[in-house]
Image (cartoon, rainbow, N blue to C red; front, side, top):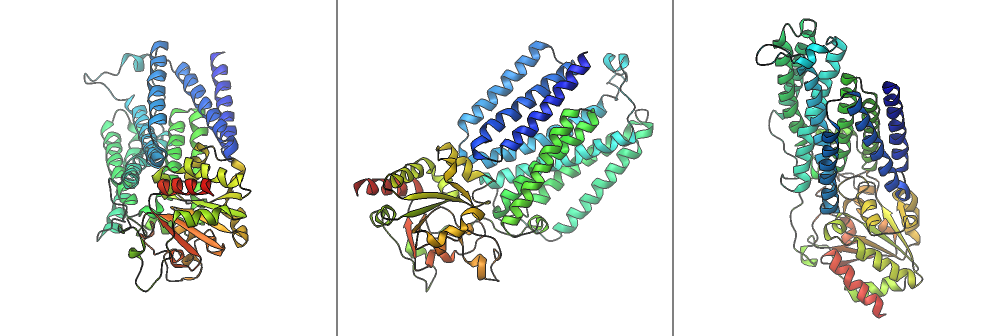
Length: 486
């Protein structure tokens, strides 16, 4: 009876995972979808703890309270600009958990310091460690460890603790290849030692430990050559890795809920990675080879930072407010600069003021704007921007030709016209938002520094572009005051 109830709980949890992910497709239903998926995971965890009574009810409640408390603190204290780093950290800890759980499953067979297995194992000996189980164990360790170390390299790059520039050194590719071959060898030693385990402990233990160490180094070497411009793709890919590691661990434990949830995360992460690559017109292999983008050199604010021989048309808040107030259609293009300045609430207030004046206001969202997939959507949703005003690139690109003013807030590479015609540019072929086709473009930026690709933005020097220099939130606040005064 208990087994049937737990199987039913797993089925309900799997359904909640699928429905929750489906509802994440739309900003209007994303919050509810997240709640459904979280509820499904809670149900799966509780069911598993009843299936394997390793904790008392008091310990279960204490764990839920402590874990939920940590999550609540993070949800309230972590700023939206730090969400990409938080996601990277979650990916890393998820990978580490999968690797440790797989290793713990093997450790159950090992004798204690006195050479005797625990009483629990003596009373209920685990099933023999088959070759099939051994394969899933080594996959869990490999993928989990790579995810852990790679995710925290990505965390460091996003946080600014590590340089966003690609890190390359002579012989790096060869070293990576040798480490990968070494990891495969360690996996072979582990699996080959399975038939004689636990009588012959050394091959399995040594193989597992060597594999874990090599995988940690591999994770670092796979991410450090990737520049800051590609971090959104890396975060999505590592999210997929964490799901695959969890699914492999599910096979180790014969846990249906873990297999289903891991497979869903792994598949959705790969799909999102592919979407991100298409949004940049680059292959996943090209991203993984690294060497693209990084920390742009700091530039002084104002026209003095413009390239030699090119003219920058600076504007004031007063002039920009007039252009916005008397426009018929305005498209707002948010970028990472808006996130850094925490200007999303001010942007919504400005949009509401313009709407009161009869201006049609829309938001254009590029798939790779910000530091992670959906970053701009989350920021604008936090500011209660109506969902029906948010448009993806393919939906809105045809409207820029009939737009009076495009207001670009901190976006850079995703609006650079060089991507359409400059075959020598690193971003050539990347789909962009066609803001340059608007009658007037107003760009809010601190300085003339390029984006993560390190490529100078042609849009800054276009005759129909006006640059409003300064902190995005302060500039928007000045615009609001001027629009109210008109």
